[in-house]
Image 1 (cartoon, rainbow, N blue to C red):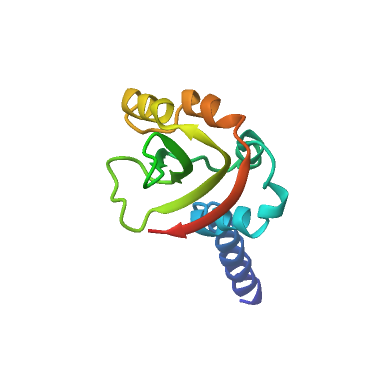
Image 2 (image 1 turned 60 degrees about the horizontal axis):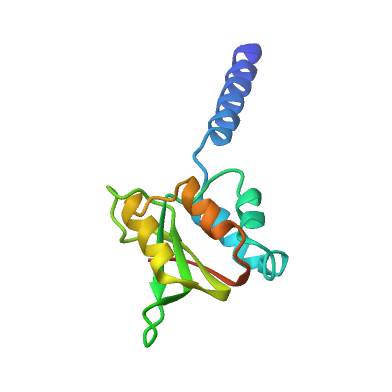
Length: 138
């Protein structure tokens, strides 16, 4: 009887640990760590940050033109949800760039790729220098 109880306890413990290891990543907490450690990424190219994001990458990208100068972009939102998902509650990695980006470049790629974060966007933003990082849930 003791062996059966011990076996049940070990069996339960084994599968509870295994199920925790296979849980999906907590995206908000994962991405929030990049904001907390932003000193490691500020004044470095965006490609460096992307390389550190081994577990998850942004799904969509949205460039925000400056209010009074609509031909330049100072910041970009990288969302961790697909287009067919609701943007409400989406996790946003908001990057402010050290130098402005021409809006025509970001708009062209956005329209061409349906605002998905593709290799084209990685090339465009990869060498841009990060000035600030904010992470929030919409």
